[in-house]
Image (cartoon, rainbow, N blue to C red; front, side):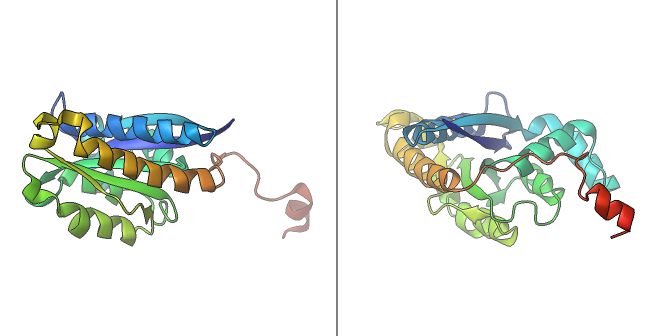
Length: 205
């Protein structure tokens, strides 16, 4: 069985967080869908609230502290990303945007990404299309067609979390897992690997 690395980025600020809850549901759905294709998923979840100060420091100094750098490396090495943000003032949170601002340019190029968001009311659902999707398109990531939005009523509606929200979660997860399974695994970059042979070094080329 082959293995793919799925990295989840959750920008929820509260604890417990509906943003983290949605992130976990999406991660489980992606894992289950990949298994049906004979692909095992190694899932890692990162809560940006734990790195808020480091993200600010990285923006001010241009250098990421070790803890944040490990998260950035994990995102870059992932075969697929699930990103979830709360919606504030009709757009993604500042913490969410700042994290992706400190990523190296082009590091998400071609990477499959599932975008999702939470808010108190469904009136904010279009933020996925006018804010998140354009941002990841700018980063040249491959965003799956289905974006997942969860308002408060989605968690406590008549059908509960197993109703329309779960249908959207499963559809989006299926789209991401199809893209991830079709790609070659992203090999981790070895910072000590030699990029030239001894013969090339001796010849000065």
